[in-house]
Image 1 (tube, each protein chain N blue to C red):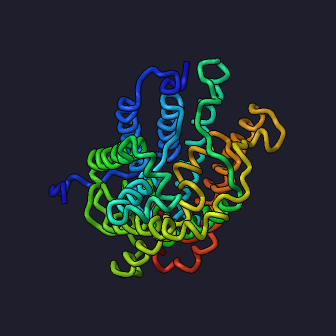
Image 2: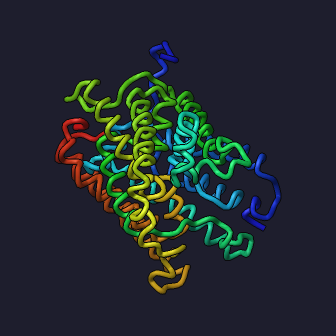
Length: 200
Length: 178
């Protein structure tokens, strides 16, 4: 029965070996996608290269369908897969701030690690910035704690929130992703014709 | 730098949909084997917390944020799942970059901006990102990817907010990229 770790197929120490191997796959995929390069990532926000959207939504849909399928087969106890609580206001504001940092600095935490490991100086400097930003957050935490803990909605998922079945939400997410891919392909073509360029 | 020969040109990046499926399968493997998703900023938070504790132990234990990452003292906080995962990310990124001849000591930037300016932007963006990620309880990998696949309301709201924040300031920093 999956997830294996939760059913004690192995211990914490072997879990760290798994972490390392999964990390290799994660870093490999990010680099393959061009996400070690800030110009590719930033291009998403000027609409001339929609790789970020394409890779992210494809990954989400793939993992989501896998989870749905394995739990439907009865091989996976989905309730044992960790989902954090939703704290809606701090998460929306935090996301907005993070998005600003993304386009100003050119990376997110995971991609800056890949960028640094493939020699990019800007990725290394960005990574230092993240350390400092987290330190600033930590030092300000006593002031922020009230807001940080506010609007706790518990472990709420989209099926519960909209009162629809798990399968229906999965279907709607797939439809939305396909529509986003079609729009992204169309948008890239239109802009490439208009500007006569594109970063690939 | 690594490959001196001229014939080892960097290869183009892979098809984004193929990469997306690959990334999705890595995420799915984490769910099925470990019962948890991917992450990145959490590892940095642990390192920051351990650093603060080394310099100012009393100060760190009085702060609930650091305390969460330092644990109860029974295990070494650095013996952490996310830290080992991020070490893997370093190795995996280097491996993929080496195979495609993309390892290069350079600074990625648009043509109209100096390296110095780009690095100031990078550092500033990193600070903002670190702060935002902690306020939101995760970053693009831990919240948007992982929470997205698990259909978490917070994960999806966060993801749309990230795109919102990015598009909101993109115009003002366009000189850096275009």
